[in-house]
Length: 267
Image (cartoon, rainbow, N blue to C red; front, side):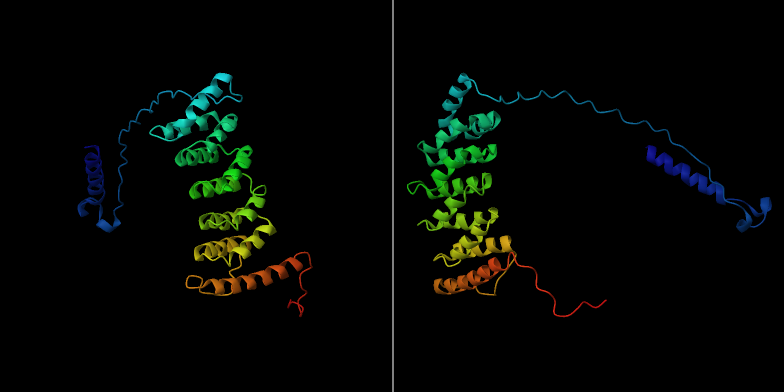
């Protein structure tokens, strides 16, 4: 309704400005146009009112004996219908609950142990890394639990996890070797490059391709063009030797001064 009224006022103003008869003031071209300013009343909308949100109880810095007992009682519930709620409870308690949470890594139930590792990854406390690496190196553990424990440990403490990566690169489980190949890109050390070059010759094709992708992320070197998707194990072993020769040369020249150009630059 208000918009229609505004357009009517504008149209009326235009008609008043252009409808000037010749008898009143000469030709229409010589007559000035008139604009009638019109202001439409405007009422600003009321300010929104938001109800006060109740703040969550802050997590304690030190857990009491009662809270520790409650946390231990929640460990079996990491598997089941209430697992998401229990994960949220542990995350709310924060780093003080990590010594209790790592006990779940030895409890029965692969899903329970997997959810415990996921909870530790959300809490982000490096003090859980030794326990996570023990799970990753346990050959009796489920493969997906081992691979997840290795991923979380590397994200929390990359350099401290390097010895475990060097050990697990020869693990019988190809899923664990692929996790090693993927996580090496997060360890910015020369040892990671050497480890990935060794994994280029892995008997499993997808492990070798993962190592190649991690090498590119670490070194920004694509290497010679090869058909990795259609390659054989023998071909990948030969191609890994090319990378090894390049890496040895790069290590020799790492502390050397840059080569002087043969010709002077043109000014």
